[in-house]
Each structure stands twice: as structure tokens, then as C-alpha cells.
Picture 1 (cartoon, helix red, strand yellow):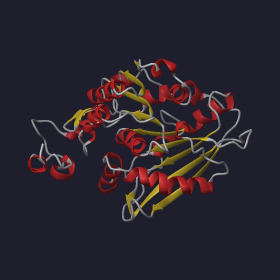
Picture 2 (cartoon, one colour; picture 1 turned 180 degrees about the vertical axis):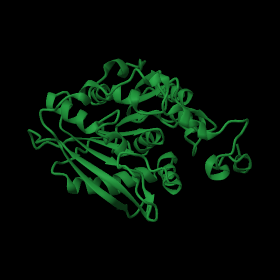
Picture 3 (tube, one colour; picture 1 turned 180 degrees about the horizontal axis):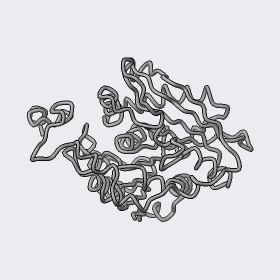
Length: 329
């Protein structure tokens, strides 16, 4: 398709930016609210590791209103750094970077990531691992969210989150690699491993597709992806990822995808179908991929139930997928 036709059809425009909450065929993007809490989520509870008392507790440091100076000037965001409890050796530690970090950290939420990391490391199921939990940026004139654990739904903050997470460019990858990680390494008392096979990007919804996009652009920095209800739909072109995966030489990235039958279905696209398409594309291209498709909606309930299991899978070898047969549940 030539550029003129592409633009004439409005394919270069984000629907909400261009047309707001407009209804089309009686349907609206606001219907995503119906997927945020569904009957299919009832069966899911935080994984057992999220409910145990750990033998050792890592240290969590919070940095409020941290500024990006290069990739996203004029924005501030909250950053939390998790340092594992007294590693037994001086060897470099593995790394997890969480988009929408507060949502994953929420001590009463469905994931409770810090508690799970404590328990897995104390039991030896996971080696020493540091984590960076980062919120999307917000313009300087936008107040912080009421809770540090929630997403900021101020209109300007939502737009900034989409700009950072939904774009297919390498801007967010540059932000993480060139700005965020040097800051984290400077603050942490442990050395982060440079090996991409020990470094993971994690996110939900737009943060999920962003986790993939970051690793795609920088497989030299991130070789692991954990995407929950990833927005592989046409918010800012993300529906093109399955084709790009199929038509490009595979990169050394191991991918865990999760979605559910009651995930969102709005003008932007159908999340269950989009995640199935993405999983199929990764399988087609020979990636090491696992896809967990459940009964739930567009939230972290299923993700939380699987969280410890997904980390174990990502950070260990999975010969069944490396032999060409992806694990799809």
C-alpha cells in the first residue's frame, strides 16, 4: 500500500487521538471496561509464592518524580528498585524490568511481585535477581495518581503512556537501556548481568506489547519477555507485529504470553485473537514461546496466578520449545 492511500484511510492515526470516544457501529473503545473484571477471573488467585512469608526479604527503594532527560523530556515518573537479599556471591544478578511497575508491586494486588521474588530466591528456585519497577511518564503539569500502585488515568497521563508503550519505534528501548538502567545500576548495591538471556521485560496490556517491542529493538539487552494481555492491536500499529515476526529473521528472545477468552474486544481490536496471532507468529518463526490462554479478562488475575511459574520458565531452559514445539495452553 502506498503512503498516500495509507494516510487517506486514516491508518496513520490513533483512533482515540483522532476521534475520541466516538462510537462506530454502536461500539466504543470505552467497552474495554467490560473486560477489566469478568466472571472468568473468579478462578484466579495470587500464586502460592505471593502468599508465603519469605525467609529473606529484598530491599525496595522508591524514587518519586524521576525525570527522563533524553527520550521523554518534560515528563516525570515513579521508579522502584528491588535489590535481592544478600546474594551469596559477588556474581552479577539477573534483571526484571516491569512496565506499569506500581501495578505489579501492589502488596495486596494480584501479582505481588516483590514477595514472589523474595520467596523464589530464598527457596533457590530463582537465582539472585534485581528488579526495576517503572511507571509510565506524565507531563510536569499532571498530578500523580492517587495510589502509587495504580495507573494514572488523567487524560494527559494516559496519552503519554500510550505514546511510550504502544509505539513500535525504539524510543522506549533507548529510554530503558540508556537512561533507566544506568540509573538503576548506580543506585543498586549489586551488579546487573549484561547477559540478555538473564534480563526480562514485563508488562500488561500496552505495557505488554512494549515489553516485546523493547526486546525486539534491543535483543542485545533483553532476551526474555513476559507479556500479560499484550495490546497487539491497532492502537499505534501493534497489529503489525505478527507479520513483522513472520517476515523477519528470528531474534534470540524467549517469550511468555498470557491472555484469556474474555480479554478486551473493542474498536482497536480483539485481544484474545491478537495474542493468538502473535503466539502463532512466534511459533512459525521458531521462537522459544509459551502461550497461556485462560478464561479471564483484561487484568492481572490470571497473570498473578501464573507469575512464579512464568518466571521459572523464563529463567530456565525449556528443551520442549527449543526443539520446535511451542508450549501453548
